[in-house]
Length: 338
Image (cartoon, rainbow, N blue to C red; front, side):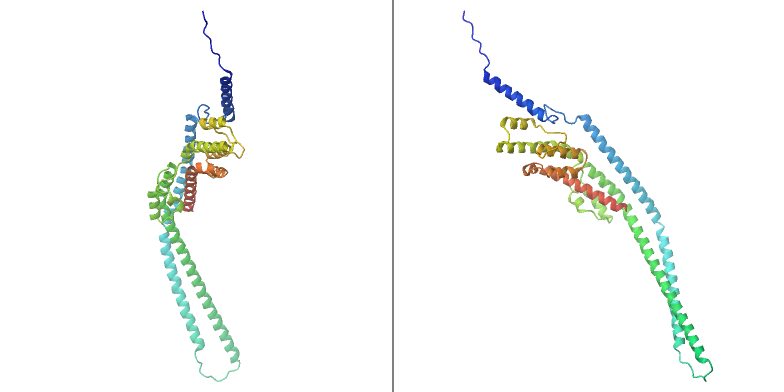
């Protein structure tokens, strides 16, 4: 009976299988901690929830501080209600000063008239020259005293007018600040939640508040939240790494198997590491992003090659919009708190 011949696995397929397996292992070892299947070590749902809770706590603390500042301002606005009475008293004082100044000025004119009045000729009297000199000195002293009093009263009148103007300006500023309290708080909430805020800006403008251009330019659409930027970063980063791998393959700096594995697995570094390659740059940028430092994240992304910058262009534009609006809002809030 003829036994069927069993075909034995060839040597070449075994070698190729070993190469592929080894390449897979090498790729995995080079990118431990990547955030895509099958080597997923990305943030779990619990970690994401904890991060959201932490952000909400920060937001609540910031709002508490804003509320405290607004309460203080409302107290100042209440004190400003007494400014009208002060202004009335200042008006009365200014009128009295003006009346006294006019009276003193009239007295000074009468003294001058008496001094310049022609004298009737009289017989010379012994010692009359000394008496005339004494009279002239007395008149001069009186004239100087009157002029000094007039100058003092005028200065007091001007000072009272300045104080009155300052009080009125303080009252106007307090009223304007009070009118901006609610829309400013609503504006902050809209920015934090990524919602449009053109209505809040309109209310602020009607209250006499000068709105920064950075807020106006993004008011119709709003800006992405910090969490939205964090969620969008991985896809943008993988696009950068795919482009970098393609460029390395074309330049002969990597082999097709390694390029294939990197592209298919989407492996990348999640922990910040040193180096100037795109993966290292992206790892440091993402670390800064997780810490909430958009300035540092954007500064890191400037070190990407131009092809990588092109892939990150939309994410960078969104991050810059978020950063600029947040800075403008902080400056506006500080100005209103003055």
